Length: 343
Image (cartoon, rainbow, N blue to C red; front, side, top):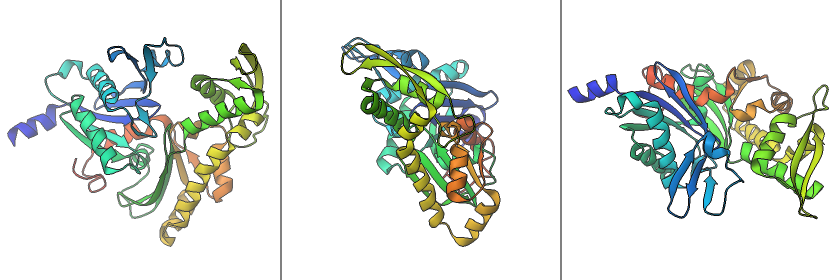
């Protein structure tokens, strides 16, 4: 008992957003200390880890046959246990250098739709990576807390967290998810839609980094004022096999990503249809909060407002809501008691 109180007081308190695209780490008293791509470069001849994070992401699509730059998480869950564990260990060691003798206490965000096996895989990987204790929090709850929504009140709050691997939609009241959906349609599917579009419409092969760049530079969910953004896409001509570059604009990319965007809209509609009447009245007054990297897609708030006939707001810092929410649970467990299991 004495040791646990000592450990609880002096162990590093860490919140982690283990995302498909990026991993963020928040340390109590320091804030967000790490924001790196969830990418690992592996030498497949001996399974040696060569690089992790930003350095490994630079290698995507540019490695020789024996080196593979991989994303160990797929659709928000662990696809490669060993590589995920190595990535987590690398990140935890970077943020806990001065207290390496005391294992940290970690709260880690996971998608709400994962299975018990997937939950156990995340917890086990975190413990094997060096955590003294690993607790899981569902991403929509964590995102709502990080965005500043009063989830502890007896009133409905709605959050839509659009990440890299999953989109999470939830109606929250009294520290619990009343109804919600988790769909594996998010930023990665938007990138894949752009790759497919370029293949079919322009006979051009591009990689994921190029598709992501196009999305950031000219992507939009609906027509906007001055909708004349242009960018140059570079890839390989599928007919000649030679390098190729073309100019592409917002209307084309909006057409390309229409299907995954509509999938997110449909998930929101279904969630609202299953919402109790009293909570639905609260949502009409409070509106919908958008978080995650997908919230930065141009016009996504306008599209959702038109589709739901409700006010839609983008969180002040949408990319960091999940990790900030996990950290706030550690800082004030009494306020959020009952929502996440024992912490």
